[in-house]
Image 1 (cartoon, rainbow, N blue to C red):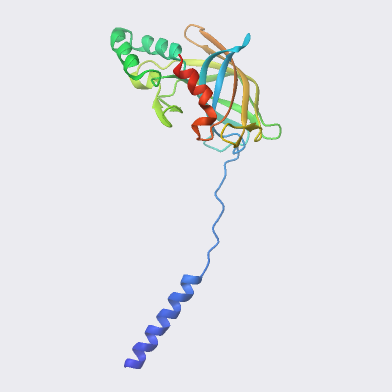
Image 2: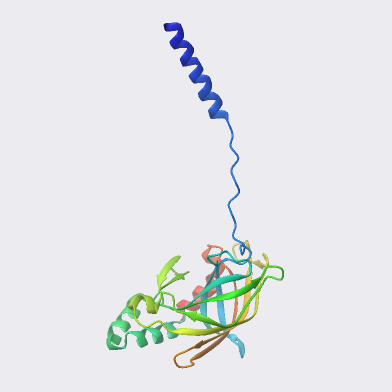
Length: 231
């Protein structure tokens, strides 16, 4: 009996050793069909008539569609301009303007920013993206690069009216590791012109956007953070 037990124990040990040494093939992480463009970018929103006049700082989040279309993406823009954010918040929360001012006085520029979400066409071959009078809306949540994560938008925080917009993007271009960052990395650039027209009153905003894909290192976007702090 002892010899049988020893045999079974030895067999079990050998089996364990063999299984422990066995290797398995691990599949590569699955990439979206728009991996060349998707991600989060931080850009300066510049006056189209004066390249030295920065009007705001945007973060732009580009994601694939539900069907993972190779030629179409979702674009969510977060506008960190204190003037634009305060204006939108006041519109949504007009009966409580004093409370709004208290929020702004307490928290500074990290706030309830204006945000826009719309679909755009993209082309991998020439690394471009564009749209004409795309239907845009205000998302309830947007990415806030100053906080390193999601944030309520102005409309989302107050759960008030969600405006709709027509968005036109021209000359949209994504570079290919063409930006040498301050921390010594390479990043993709993003450049385009954009026009945002609010449906309710035809309020129109036009910008030239210039920036780079977020590397996660604060030093690479310090100039834009400095602009925010100086508002």
